[in-house]
Length: 139
Image (cartoon, rainbow, N blue to C red; front, side, top):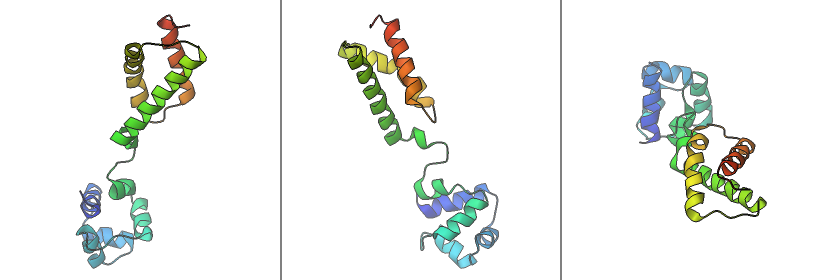
């Protein structure tokens, strides 16, 4: 989906017609039409004005809605890497190993909580990892 399509979608979500949306953004109707038809790209002043009116400018420009940033595939992959790294660090500190199967089972156990949190705290996860390892008898 293009920026113009998402812009039109946001305008409709706000229940505004092109004329009213253009007016609140400080542009002519022809500019609004050009933006929605991907003939021109909106500038920062325009985006700031529509953000003031409640448009999700992040969604318009990136296709990711506010609050959904942590659910993109790239964000999920990064979270999995962080989780695996924290788990490996904890195992290293304990000077113990865990089989590859055990490591992946523990990742599977910890993942739902970590992936669902919009703003995860690594310190809190470290405590959860320590608890999970202790529950498995890993000293």
